[in-house]
Length: 334
Image (cartoon, rainbow, N blue to C red; front, top):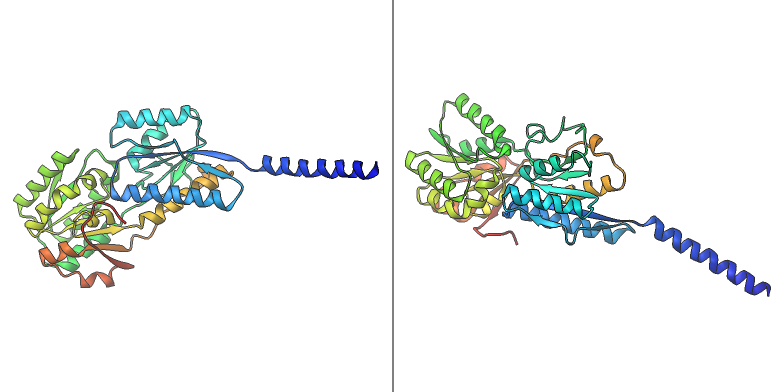
């Protein structure tokens, strides 16, 4: 009889331990909202998923995103609808990728205070997302791919010290482009270099703007981390290539899609860091007090096919960058 009582007690203790262990584990629903389909943002989204999977595998807590991954394809109405759907589904955190998506999610979460961890926002303060990089001040923080504009323009003059005119190609509808373009103008004015501005809000307009820059006879073209131009790069790079005009831009995906040089952060690392921040906040960190993460802008990616076609030497880049990476034209990173 005594043995049976002991057995029952042991069984009860084990059951209690199992229940306690189960109670300690949690499942969190993660919503991911990508602004548009382009190579850089696709890299980020894939890295976020991979890191969330890794975090789920290494511990008891699970970070589930299936069924809550959306791509608004640059349409604000669609992005708003997708955000509303994630909120209705009861996600515990939302990860918007790129500035326009982050701004929409910020507005949608002002009342419900769902934590938001953005990714690839070039100027979080200028976009009105955070009070400061060190202390965001609300329910939102994240990672920034802020561009060192002067550094990429230094590369431009390294390859061609005799540049007389630079084309500025960007979208006026993207907040992420405002500060880099202002910085570029200041840099070029100080150097006594003329610039020609052309903008577009969709692929057709960007293509027309590229034609106008070729017609203007600019010596090089600069584009910041602009998603509108990024989505059009595969359609415009040959215009610059045929005119032997190097296109310098603020992300490696531009070079992948045919531009001469992309300069900026490693977007896989950016996505991984974004997922890590989301996990930290789900486990108790306060987004209002979690500093926005920034990254080294020292990586230049050169399209070797384009470099050969326009006959431009980029050997001097190595002294100006943390690393020089070579690529060839493709639609997506492998």
